[in-house]
Length: 110
Image 1 (tube, one colour):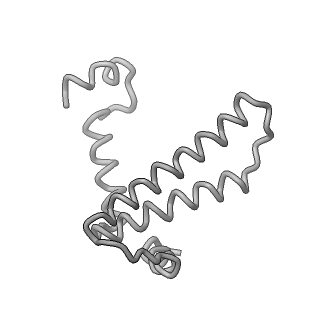
Image 2 (cartoon, one colour):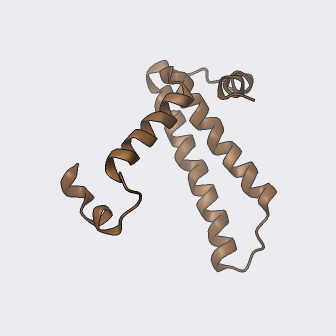
Image 3 (cartoon, rainbow, N blue to C red):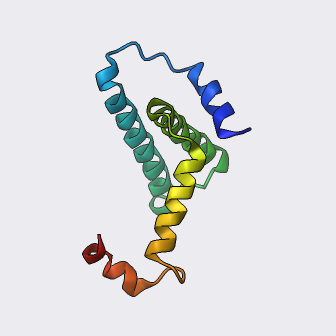
């Protein structure tokens, strides 16, 4: 499935009926909330003795992607453009691959 197809399928369950001016904030809160759920789940796995359930993790990552997809849709941003911009940024930041020293001194470059 392409990301555009995924967005179309997500729209079927997107029923926001509120003010368009605050819609983006609702999507951002959902994205942050789902990120928190992933972190909490992995905390339980890493520190509380829970077994890793890949299906549970995929489900939580899917919820995160739903909000990500709806944000892309809201701003009419193509997924490929997000991927390309990220790779360009990383290539510029770390032209020879990740470097600890470049990472430590990155704040002064931004």
